[in-house]
Image 1: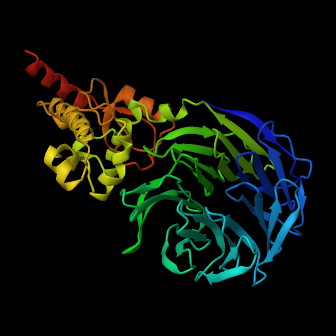
Image 2: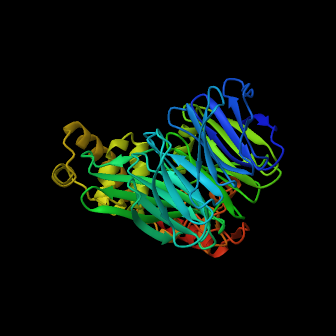
Image 3: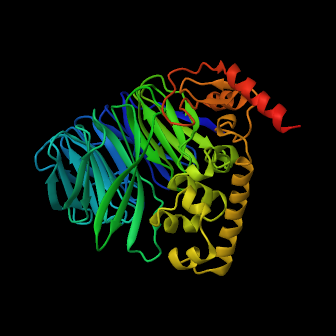
Length: 476
């Protein structure tokens, strides 16, 4: 469960950004102010609001320790504040004087990146407040930025739709078109997947844009071989431009806010929608998870910030059996295998399996020898556990392939259909299973993951007759 526990309504104009530290919540607005609240009771601090900027404040973020807050504005400045006293520590002016749209601290607090409307990106020394390096993107305004958990690279997003990856020396590693109509936000998951030798690192990155989509990327970084960005999947829960996205601190959830006034919370592992929140009355411009507790803040053009609290059982529900991969095991993707590993309490093997491109078919063919020799799983107990779980999967495969024609089996339940219906994706499903799928606001096809043109279900009488004839023949 998730419930609205508090609404902050102190800003006089659109809320542009909100950010958490371990003890505080910061919000900023078109009204030129930054406000600070205590997480203990959501009361505003005595030295709030923070006033310096002469135009709209677009973004705010805490240093990892929470002692410093950065804010940036149309006035071309990025300001550092002491969160305990509200005092101004530094005013850093964008060299071009262009409006600053986004700012982010590195995970080790040594630097701060600011991105501006003219496409310039500046890395500041967060201790001396001096300019360290400058760069720029080819086209568009810089509107999004996120550091990888290790801090050895960061990503910027532009209004032209380009994702650009930089290393910690401000060298451009890669750039590609990610969202045709422009990027609005991006965020790295804090979960780092490594091969155990700390040489090859995998990160999960989310980006969202004016094309109404959220895209999930896998970023790999090898000290010897360099960097690679791979598209993974698209989340299409919103029906209007998506303005904000953020991972939960443990990486298990992803939240997004949209022009459609809704907030959607996804299970990161299965990419299923957990919750759709519709409290805001205008565009949702920002969303952020707290670092240590299950709190979510969402801000809007309705001038409010809503605070949501999650039930501790949320993550367990997110990974419940009905949300596990629905297709046949042989057709599982590498990510489906990762989800299965987590469900079997084998999450330590996710990185190894991903590195070796283990999909469903490869999983079913694993042996004691291949686990030891090819995947280098050294623990005998761990190898035995994996093999036991794989044998359970093989038994399930045999059950499903016991002569029942594939077209008689529901793709959702993986059982023989009793009341088949045709969905608008052209596939047939068990009626009750598909109705449950749709009732949970899963407006995507279970088979293609594309948006369903319609939620109307048509009885498949021809298929039902065929199933009945088959049953009459095989149950004698």
